[in-house]
Length: 221
Image 1 (spheres, one colour):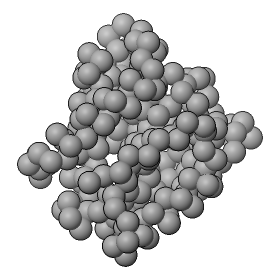
Image 2: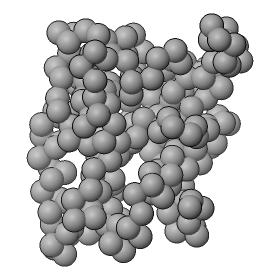
Image 3: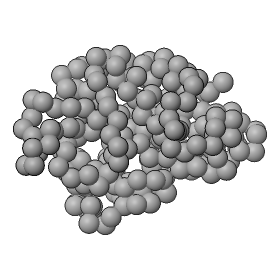
Image 4: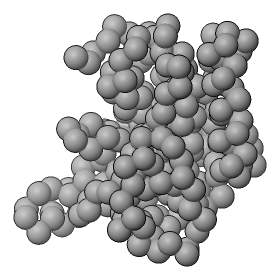
């Protein structure tokens, strides 16, 4: 059984990293079970292992932390639900790409609860929402906004870090970075899309959709 942990107050990033590492070590040692930790952070930027320093547009705006996860720069802050997934892939299949795809599918199923069509894109990890209400890119490409970011790390095949879903963050805070190194497309949130979803609403949808997605037969090659 996966243990669900929810923090009501924003958790400082170094504190979260320390707690995750301790739990992951315990899961790998067989002394603790899997866990998903739902939380928010104070405003900050994190740099993944592929982060390009040129993508940190405003380095003095918020604290910047080396995350150690895959991916590039991302923003975390109030109004954004973080779900840190500490899961044992020894028991769930040692397939990193399939695991990331399942995380995306979990987010998409969760968003569908609020009538939002989230989509995957080849070469762009995360979940995207088509924005036909906005002008296309200069090359004519239809505009899409990112609503959820994904970045994970594995240690002895136990995962940590995870996903972030924008509920009602200050979207201007993303302007200090090139989110995930992707230029042109924007960032959106549930509230920005006109849906007054609360954090509790989203948490309930995440919990309801986790097992159906992760217990289904693998849908990735």
